[in-house]
Image 1: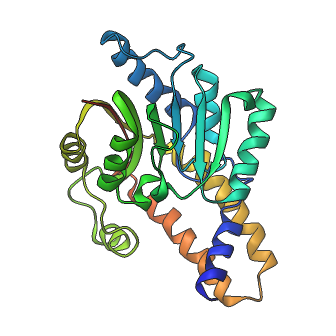
Image 2: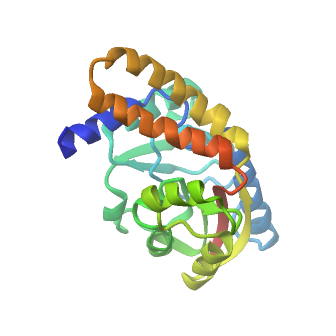
Length: 262
């Protein structure tokens, strides 16, 4: 497969019909929202019932977090992704949930975001800023954020300093820039934010919400491409990622970082 074919095949695996396109859950999205707004209310800044609250969801995918944002806040949401089928599925889910009037979809690469739409009071990004790099991503969000604006972003993070060799080598190959929470928190402060809280996503956010549905899809696609060794190799690579998590979930995970622009 050439690079274009590989990308198309990756999108076939991570189809818009999956419940989620990465680790997370409705409960974790709600917990992050509650933590942000609880702190903001104490400061007399933002509240979820504010209809003028302007919200940006970066790398929204098929809209699982976006729908929760629409359900639990009252302001308009701009949902950005660069893959049209994901945005089509978001629109379908939003209509089914009765919140489509609050969401405007935007087909754009997150690296091309500017201030054409003004600045935002709340910026959200679940598991997507790694595309730019975590520090670069939160710096870009700072430019898009209103003074005192809120930001929630989840990022793959080392939870312990002593991962076994197999685990560390796996991520040296697939995500060598992963760091620990203290390093990310220092980056957040260095980019002009105050940390309002952070928490690690539970294992169920990986296994129940993401990996189990993904494994079911892999099983189906293996039958479709049984005679294609190149595609079977791709399936085994993803299965390896799942098995690494099952063995070493105590050593790494997604951390939700919650912050406010100073």
